Image (cartoon, rainbow, N blue to C red; front, side):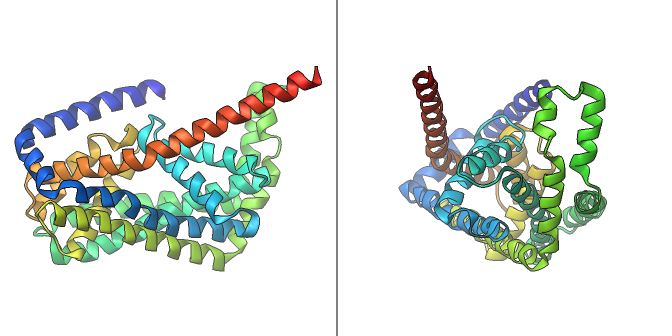
Length: 330
């Protein structure tokens, strides 16, 4: 898996460099100079869609964790998935760890993150479907939209199967029994899986609260729509404004491609290529599309680095406290 991620990273980097060279550095620098420092407003603006997404997460958890805590954990999760080579899953693991360390029971924390990720996939399907509807008005081609609908039709049963397995299949208990046969009862892996029945029960409990699930999806879709403002404003500031429907189509379809090819760390090359291809349908030249991608990555770095640093500080402080407690015991 690590080798595949490294190869994907190198390929993505090569694609990005090739697209930048094709677009032309001077033209991109001119676009950035035209926009100027106003682009930095995209950094605090990103807190809006993230906060809406956190509202959905807290809907699942209830009052077990405060909004400020969940918002901080969400920034760490996003920063890890966006900036580190973890194929978009490392942030969720760290999120469970941080939530558990804050006092939330382990199986409840894990179930909330698993369910939130699953509902996020469903929300993104709705977002892409909305993007296709708006794309019929904004894009100058129908074929890409037909391909998108075909891709959704092919992959949607997989999501449905996964939801059914989590709801009825006691999937973690089955995995525990499989691991027991393969690695033995005394393995450290078994210690991690020893509460699989509780985790399955916690997930089933969330499934039973359909109103909460529907409200979570509503918050998530609202967050995805709010995130479209980044694309809409960035293009306007770069001197190539688009309609809001065009921005929704561009953002949703780009996210669909990036999430489909999730193995590439940070979507490097994937985001750039999809923006160039889809942007051409909106009349955007390659230099504008690549500049838009670089602006998005600038926002990810500026917003995500403080989150990563705060996570490292918290982990380091916990390690120091553990060492001190052990030294006192001895």
